[in-house]
Image (cartoon, rainbow over all chains, first blue to last red; front, side, top):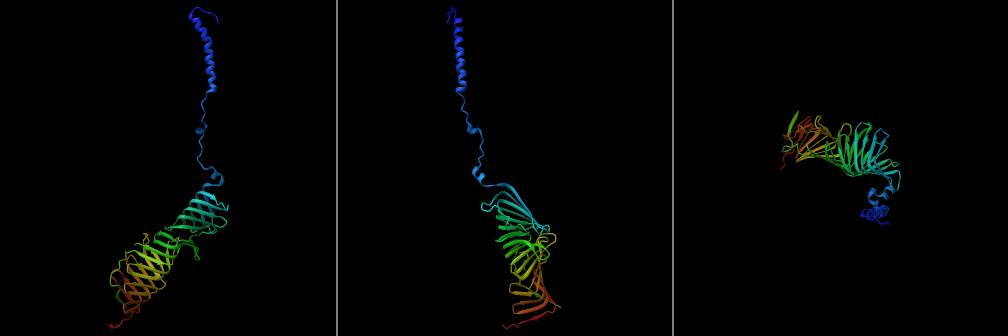
Length: 199
Length: 141
């Protein structure tokens, strides 16, 4: 390297060598020391059990409606519906609410925890704290009812507790169906009825 | 001609809860008419009434029960007295029971029969009329 007499030129000469080398070094680190990209937390995972979702078909907010032979209309809504594992024509539903509009204009509303709708069997069975309310102001609590899908008939084989204008009723079984020749729809409590009325 | 007779040695409180047991109760959906059938037993305090069928008649305005119409052979007991008739109409509001159809009233050994018996449950006395016949057992004691 040429000799210079003053310090300034010597300094510049050194700088001309050191500075490019330093820049080369800094440039090299650009690709060598990159930040570790943590891929795990950036992609949000849905915490849903993939296997059950894949294995069973499921339908949320399903509703089922049918017009019966005698003109009544039955509609059932369920929060979640799954086909029965053994038989595809049978549907299991949970948190069911339904309504039966009878041909004579009166209505019956049903609510239950779960239900099984059996298409070929023409019956829908609701179970689990079932509440049946009729437009004649009766509210009936039982644990299981069967509603036919081809005729306006709701039947509770087991014991029922009812509350209505006539008083509080406890009966062995209950049936809402068409009785008598004049096609009158009756709510019939059977198998021993006990009513208490406070005047 | 009618005879008035005391029925039941004490007044009957018709505001006591009524308990009805029967084999079957059917409620017509449209009209809301309730009919008990199959050996119906109506109990209210001391008053017991058994009948073949009992129909519940509601008051027009309120939801309350206005009358109970019993038919198909009625027996009504109140304490140690019993009345048999074909049909009875218990009017809750006026607390009166009207029994019709060959009424037989037995009070201990005595028996009175007639066509129609109206009992006022408040005062406890009744009015029987229509071919009244009375059978009095001369007191043997």
